[in-house]
Length: 333
Ligand code: ATP
Ligand code: LTN
Image 1 (cartoon, protein in one colour):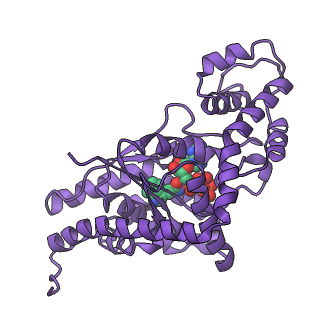
Image 2 (spheres, protein in one colour; image 1 turned 90 degrees about the vertical axis):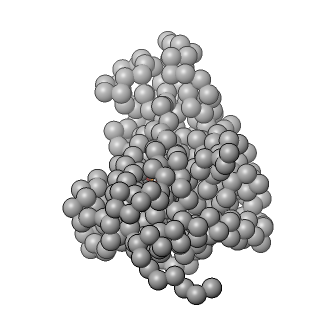
Image 3 (cartoon, helix red, strand yellow; image 1 turned 180 degrees about the horizontal axis):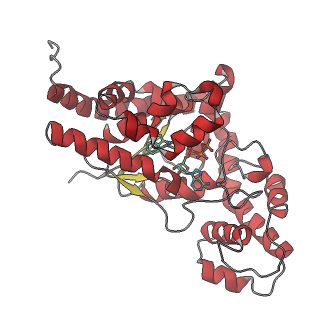
């Protein structure tokens, strides 16, 4: 039997953070052996906010290198740039005509981003989840490994797929979100009640996966905690400490309970240093591999080309099925 399909992506904006790593990429890595995985740099999504062209191009390549540096393996997974596979945009148009302004305007991310970018309320901002649905549905995806903030978008993709299947006939696999039990939302180191965001203006709020050891150590030392001195998981009363416990347990592959025991009676200073050290060790090979890969752009672009070719082959199958079902005239072969 064919392997089930996994699809996920990250937009090339800001820098890939420990939040992206724990919330999404760690699961991507785990799924590589048992599924047909497609991991995409969703550059078309990034265009919904203004991008300076030269910077945008460099950042997209850097993200591609970071994907590989985390251990995503082009021998196992299909890794590519969204803009290299035109079927994403083609399916989006069809899905647009099967999506409603009402449902799109209710999306939390749309409402947040509209508030953040009142001077650039472009159509893409609102259409963002439909493009995301196209990404997913093009490959007959079963599972979408993402952090909790993307759950609503995956649910919308399910709704759009179900609606299309009912209107025409079964066409799309109905995808499911795949969200980690612990670490689905890593919080800012400076404001532990808001999400660690890769586009935060304060670099102390996030850890980039290619930050230097010194930067990582410094950022954890400065992490905002609370004024008592107990290392205990309590998201309501101790969001900072709870966030650090979540990070520590994820990168050392232990449970929160074991981590609490390990640090029982210890001071915050010692705890923060230990979390920093664990993250430094976890990310050391990523940073090393990243540096190597960035010196080998030809190799990166070859992987991207092969990835796009394979993705496009798979995508075309779904797209022609869709075109046939909606009644487009088939071109003469
Ligand atoms: P931005 O802050 O620019 O909106 P982002 O940090 O949300 O970006 P995305 O490219 O939108 O990053 O997200 C990539 C993936 O990482 C998604 O699956 C998302 O759910 C996950 N993710 C992002 N931030 C976190 C976080 N703080 N904790 C856990 N998962 C996260
Ligand atoms: N919207 C996602 C990025 C994204 C995505 C996807 C994730 C675009 N297309 C398809 C999973 C599947 C985000 O994380 N902001």
